Length: 253
Ligand code: NDP
Image (cartoon, rainbow, N blue to C red; front, side, top):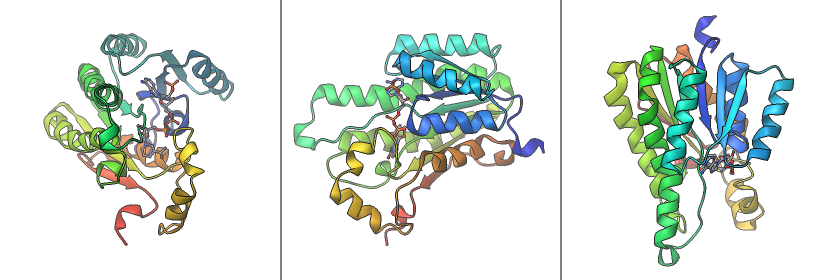
């Protein structure tokens, strides 16, 4: 059924060598899409690409630091030539985490987090606009976080980048609907990835997880499935939405 398939679709997923991005790349490819991904570490990226070739997935990759303006331009040039100027799906997933109190945060922390988590997603989407428009059916998904909706201590800058992605989702959706481009956002709660692993050993975090309605942390595949759904023709009337994948954390109970 065409509504539940990505056969013939093209996709760019940033940060696909680990964690949530890795699961999204596999999910999109399994649904039939041709996927390009990127990360900074070449060795890790190559080992992923090797594994995916073995599974007969149509996945390519290039080294790119999404915090660099120049490298973002090169990445979209590469994607444009690979996919003949047409891109159906852009997943702005690459991002990082900073746990620091406001009084300890430096100007460098601020600009590093903003360029990695926020400016990257804004500029890559801007650069991809002609490609998404040319595809006739474009879909952007921002991976934000429930931290961008709530007010946790010690993660102010991180949360600001994610809150801004939640907001941008609505602006992109309202501005680019006329171009056949939808924009949505997936806001995960704590998910088991290399990024969150060090914090999961924390007894306090473990205690908090136990009181979630679903009583456990999330898996990358559980974030990937809704992300892929938002890109399917089946989701063709959904735009500007922020969907939490958090085991019920934001219910406030
Ligand atoms: P991981 O650190 O496990 O994976 C991040 C991926 O992005 C890696 O492939 C990494 O490769 C790549 N990446 C990181 N920085 C850059 C960069 N500057 N340029 C290009 N690629 C980069 O993170 P997660 O999978 O946990 O997180 C993915 C997204 O989900 C992030 O935006 C994060 O904020 C968000 N999220 C995660 C949650 C969690 O609990 N894990 C909760 C809520 C949101 P490399 O290092 O080689 O560049």
